[in-house]
Amino acid sequence: QFWSPLVNRRADGYGGSLDNRLRFTFEVLEAVRSAADGHLLIGLRMLGTEDQPGGLDEEACCEIAVRLAGSGMLDFLNVAGPSLATDDGLSKAIPTAGTPLAPYLPVAAAVRDAVDLPLLHATRITDLATARHAIESGAVDLVGMTRAHFADPHLVAKLKRGEAGRIRTCVGASLCINRLHLGLDSVCIQNPATGREGTVPQLVERSAGPRRRVIVVGGGPGGLEAARTAAERGHAVVLFEAQDRLGGQLSLMARAGERQREVSGLVDWLVDEVALVGVDIRLSTPVDASDVLAEAPDVVIVATGGTPEVSYLEMGAELVSTAWDVLGGSVRPEGRVLVYDDHGAERGLAVVEFLAGKADLLGVSGIEVVTPDRHVGLDLATPLGPTYLRMLYEGGVTMTPDHRLVAVEPTDGGFLRAVMRNEYTREEVDRMVDAVVVEHGVVPDEDLYVTLREGSANGGVVDLEALSGGRAQPAFTGTDGGYLLYRVGDCVASRDVASALLDARRLLQHL
Image 1 (cartoon, one colour):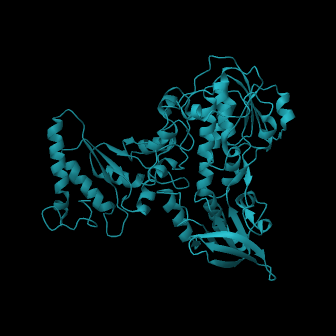
Image 2 (cartoon, rainbow, N blue to C red):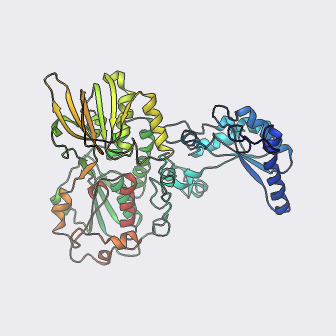
Image 3 (spheres, rainbow, N blue to C red):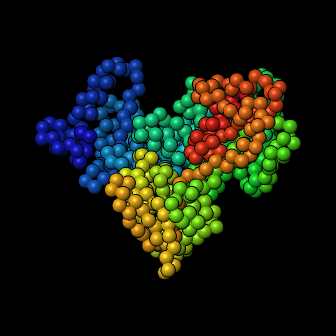
């Protein structure tokens, strides 16, 4: 803040010229160097550019770096991306999935060329290949891989063991950062142990108890994590998936755009791992209760997900499409499209991104996204919110908050009348559109679970106190009364990928 002419408006010895704006920094460094008394290495993190009109550009930041290095008071520099002073800047400084890897490496390299100090850089260096390039190219001397270690704290250990292929690579979902900016604890979308190590250990220990036969129905993220964890415990696991590929809803979401394609990469790691730990995977195999019971299971995990919910509409549920319809290709909206999203998360906006990106191909002439929330993407803090807002503005998408879609009616002209009600005035307004797409979550696909529940030893009940406390389910002590039955993911309630993975991991880690 002292350095930047954008915010330093002082008229004393700490403002004005660059010498004055750097004065406070050098005073701090002198005090730190004196207190360290030669026992510590001292470094400083700085911007390589503010990337703001009127702010410090790359040339100015290089000049500052030269002065810092020339002072003799630093042992290394840590160069980061743009200013964090705005939501837009923060979303660029902590880039999400679907953006280039190491986007500010050239900025760091420019500083590296200007100074004779070891230089550290950390901005979206998510994998070993990117890290290796950054160092071998001479751009930097050391890389920081923060989110990469959130995804896999054993990254370095696996590399040293020759198991680089088993590293769980950060997919840039940014749930970790998003939750921090919502005032919540930081967790990882694909590693349910990160941030919860007190109750969910990073490593799954092998069971000392009897080997059990575990049947998992559903090959989405929750089912895959359940199968992986049970197999890591040493149990015999069979995974049934009705489709010809694993991944569940993420396989559909991957079609939305670059961001969702990268996030869906978490499935690739799970698929590789279940194969490595010996799970018997049976694709294109829909099953009913008799099929499951024919496997003589000790434990059954139902991870069948859910189906899109549109029945809440007062009229016209049969006239609307869902996110699944659009991303799955069974519906091709054209003309004027209204997307209704009352979840405030990513699925609805991912559909908007898909339609905006393929507008010419689909024949989409205009998109309006409607939400009952105060603004679009209410649950998306920085950096996710600004990333999607940038896409919406650049795509010319109309955003209408504070309105709830209540009915859809056909008209004589072939259009659809979408009736929306203001959340505060209750006034109703209409939109004449060609298509309506609804993202209202899912209802659990629980038929198999309900059918199996009566014959199960535990009645299909999970002990929530044990689950949340990181303890084994009491029913795990024996299955003399028959098989144990549990469900995970959207088969419980409409939630998200992280919740499905957490369900599965917490439940199976003590089996």
